[in-house]
Length: 144
Image 1 (spheres, rainbow, N blue to C red):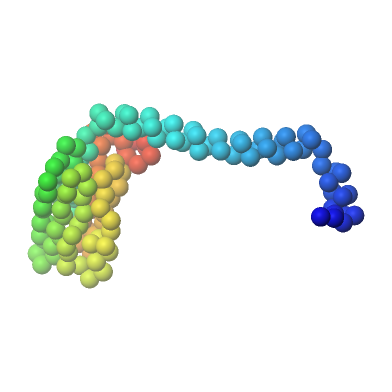
Image 2 (image 1 turned 60 degrees about the horizontal axis):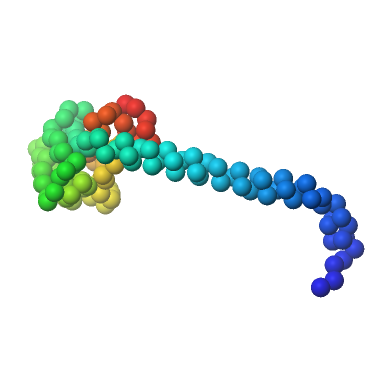
């Protein structure tokens, strides 16, 4: 393979120290990945002591709680407010709204949740299903 004169000119401009700097910068770009993975491992080991609870609120008032830590089987809760209703099901350590008569059905289409700080909201019925931790943590270690 023959190099053009311009390519030869640029290759002469690259010094060994330049290559070392580029390699060092590439390696340093992976540092945040390592830091965040260590932080997540630390949170998971601390998470063994936390108790997760699904808290169901309507217009800011708690209407029902389901303890998810150590939960086995299926627990079903039906919230009714006049003609509006939502059916919340906790299966294992996850909770989901499986049925509702709201027009948009966004809450029903939402995936099951099971980590502190996650929530499912049904805006038409003003219902919130939120996972709360016993140690006050929410998503990403941010304290309430």
